[in-house]
Length: 78
Length: 205
Ligand SMILES: [Zn+2]
Image (cartoon, rainbow over all chains, first blue to last red; front, side, top):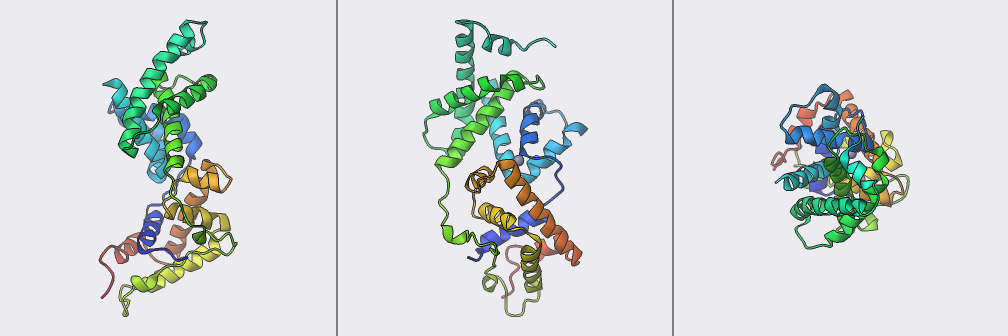
């Protein structure tokens, strides 16, 4: 079955935004708590965490969970 | 290294242990109520999700390395449990027609809807090249994984259906994206050019 026009547009976006990513979802999961705390305290991203940042840009699943984590943590800290 | 107080309490004798679990339950529920409601906006059984999360957290205590606060670490687990459960619950039903299990599965584009007769932007050439790359450079599993995502299915859900795991499916898709990108660039198409010619409204009359 052919792709619909919106799917085709998504495909082009997926290709256009592809960047090297050195880690996978599991590695990201192992460090995302630390990364989230840095974001919540508005610290910059240290060199050692760049890979997490890149993975979150590339992986919609991890990104979705990361945003949910930030929202949840804000609710807990209120 | 000193033991995190949470770990100590969660491993202590009763009734301290139960008190700590109860305290953690309240915290997780507060966090997840916000984050999951924002996403799914519908009533659901958060108690079950919190309970499931607590079990996972208790089983994973050994893997807590103290790199973040304990509660943040626990919330990463709970968030994944919650979102996975809700993705399953609200998953899109996708017709199996689009997922021909045939090894030759390829993506076809409805180019007739996009291309004007004159095709002055050169879209046809890019689509042809893209189809060639998909056929020649992607594996059958890469094509299937890409197709799942384009159908709006989350990576972990696609992993479930492909009897794989999320990490592996993510990698299939990521490698496929990179292959297509490099393939197009090798042919002399820049990403900026491709985005421009397929931008909304760029279709020729
Ligand atoms: Zn990921």
